[in-house]
Image (cartoon, rainbow over all chains, first blue to last red; front, side):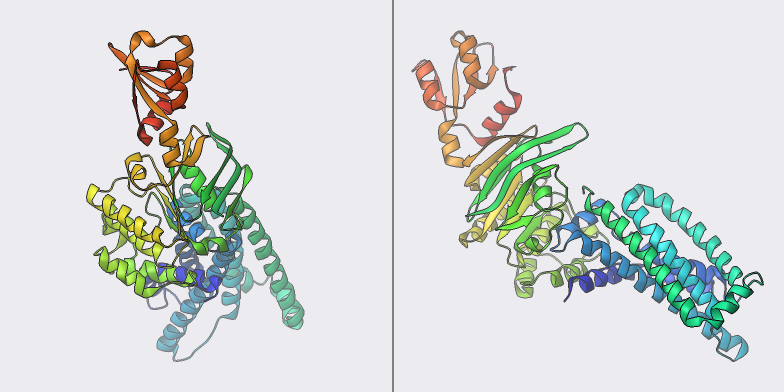
Length: 212
Length: 288
């Protein structure tokens, strides 16, 4: 089994213990109890999942365990980014599923709020790109404060991104995006990839020099 | 051929500094890494395992470059830490499922054999295991991928005497395979007196010696005699001296030289590793 897959699989096994928490959260903040397309669901669920997944091996002994495995340190960093994106996609998928079910129950139709999904994906990607280097830099103690700060930022920024995408101020840029959908998609995808690449390089530079 | 070569290893952090440590770990033997707490044993082991980034020096393991930027050489290493490094909230079975795929030579039957031998319940969570069970589990995992080098950082600390003996027997079995090597750090030198072939002694971040254990124990000597025999020149010749009201006990680093100095006026004894570690660490004059 390729080592990256082994490492991602490790994160999936570790996060299983939080499954009940995610299910309860997804239900409470779904359209069954809150309004449909709730920012609390789209904003916080993927963020919560990311923080739980990333934090599973935050303790120093667990990092020593990872480094004792026959893998290079850059694989450990790369796998954390890979796991983060898998959990991000899973988080958004759960949100979509919950919304689709509640839409079906409430209105008898299925609809996908594309701007909310894209907004969540972009804001969460940015969040991950900021969070991971800070996580490797600050370690366990610093990360506890970081988690609190990041959850607040997720809630605020995700709501802001979603409302921005829905506001009239951005209607002209959005019209341009609609008219040039391929160019806009390439631009957004490239900018996102660049941010992730820079973030990965920073995390790698920090972790390569870290004594465990 | 040496299983591990450490050349010019240096590392400093906070008030601690290790300078220019070089020693080999001969292949096919048990090498004990001894020294008092804080001497630098764990730092050396962590440097070999790539857990710390040295300020200088080169480490090779079985001919491959080792250290923080490498990874694949650890396929050949079974590592047992001085503390639990596994995920406490997982069961032993879950933890094994994480570890096994990383090793090309993982042997499930061997793993089950060790779990059975150590009477470890697979479904038990690691956090609910005793210190002894955690060490046994770490040994089972470390041995189940057929490593040719076993690195153990203080594995016997905190273990009961019965299991300590069992562990030493297990190591003796492992080393029967002539390609296998063990690097074993401990401040409990009685364990190493029993099993080590070579000994590397670290004190305050410097290398005191690294040699064949029997040659070391032949070369050094405990000298016991009357206090009147001690003068300035003789004190300088001794590595460490412990004085009492009636006499002294000291460690000489050269038995032949001690015999020339004292003749038959004193008693000579073969030291233990603990004697050597004690007198070297304490140094000069000690009063009992």
